[in-house]
Length: 137
Image 1 (tube, rainbow, N blue to C red):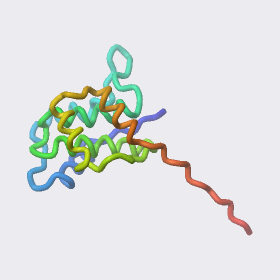
Image 2: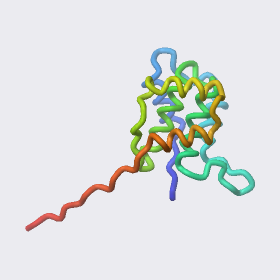
Image 3: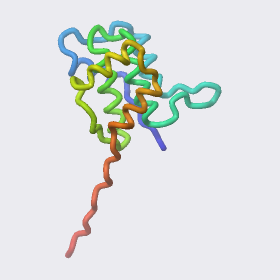
């Protein structure tokens, strides 16, 4: 499977659009490290090998840090769900406000990346392929 990763500019836009007046990057280097995290290779092997673990890298990476001035958990959640959507998965789980308890637990490091990946998988569904109708002439 070919993966399409979120660009730093897109994640900045998510933070600004959904996190209000206090939004913005506080720590540029830390921010960029999380942006690149889903692509991490260790000794030639992908650290996050599937779509759920890669999405988890965004959510966990931003939720457990303070690289934004505001909206770290929200930006992590939205980045993860956008990443899943890009890869043909629909988010069928709770909206960000309803997921607050879980996100607070992630931020408190009560859940590791594997647990977050399982949570994301549980609340995702494959998007059905579009039906193509042949035109009749």
